[in-house]
Length: 254
Image (cartoon, rainbow, N blue to C red):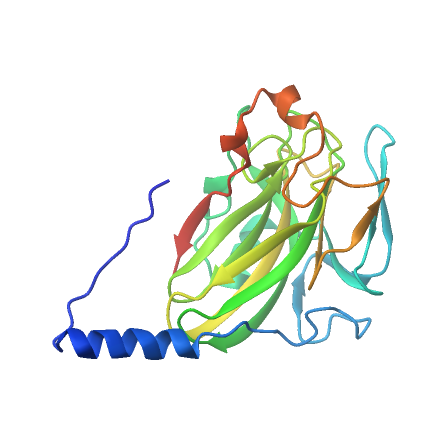
């Protein structure tokens, strides 16, 4: 998808433009949100919708009895299970337009998001500031269900990223798959107030949940999960997808 860029004319000369750009670049920082590593052992500083917990090692059993144990980088991580709230209520609570998440649910077999959960925190930042988190997605369901997870940066020039799904966009893990620990980085498009949200959902039904684990840096898996940036072995061949299918799809949000 081509990103649309709007260029504004400045009344000042080239020297002023260069000075403004340099000042903006100099002010950009990597933001660390309070309790971003969840080492308080709680979800303090975070807000939640649906089924969310501060968790140590968590074992997830899929429909076919595959067991994935996801382990925090230190002692604790955020764990989201896709139940407890409707997707419509999640969008409403976050202040994003109804249908935003469903529009990115590219299930080749057709589908509609039903329920899920969200973990989010508000903060303020400047143009060019960044936030980085590690995440791990586990599907307990199977094709033709899709159950995508998202990272949503809400604010001026914000965006929605599809992190992973069973056989759609983001990292396609396949039936009972595990994404491995991946990295998310969000960049602020303007000075202002923002909210960063992580969301995981069910597609077509409300039976076999997806799981999304969040930490400040990558943890580990048992059995060994795929390397960062590489989906579950065999899932791409199973789905007949090329490398293009691994790219994140991003949509701007207000």
